[in-house]
Image (cartoon, rainbow over all chains, first blue to last red):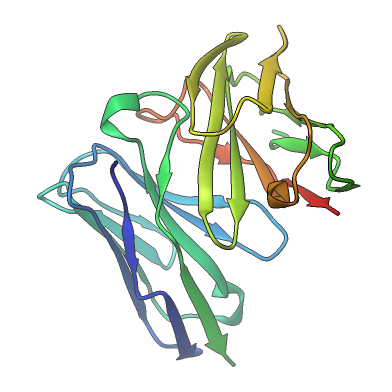
Length: 114
Length: 115
């Protein structure tokens, strides 16, 4: 089945640094979603991308939908301690578009040193 | 607008028992999906309900079931609990399933521990 591969698996950075993480697949996705999960809580939607090439920002976060439809990246600028958490990419499988079924990447764990 | 609400937050059960988890979606959302999250398997889709009908199902045994009520609230049930069912169970709601301007919003989950 379709899979999403996130990299890196984990990052440990200094406060104030910029962060970049990405998500790739061997097959096409028509939507890319980026979520952040804090310990003990559910994933929170950060950015939703619906069109190839689309670049969308949400505060210090920027995400892009790759032209090939097989990848997406998320950038965080000027990181702060509250950016700590696990970041997931997700997308609907080809066979179940427009439903509540999503495939998730394995996550990128971000730690920020004050 | 209130978010997705899941109850209870924590549950401890014994092998062989059954459990029912509850989810109240965001007002106006008709799609409710359930996910299981474990350290080894990550986030995996269990099933989705839309307008009281199961629309989609993941690769889980029949011990996992669910339903949706006319007010869109949903419950999932796990029967004959096994140790491997210990996980964070997440509920997500959306207007009509994941589509343009209708992304999934998650609750904070129910942490189930099976002993």
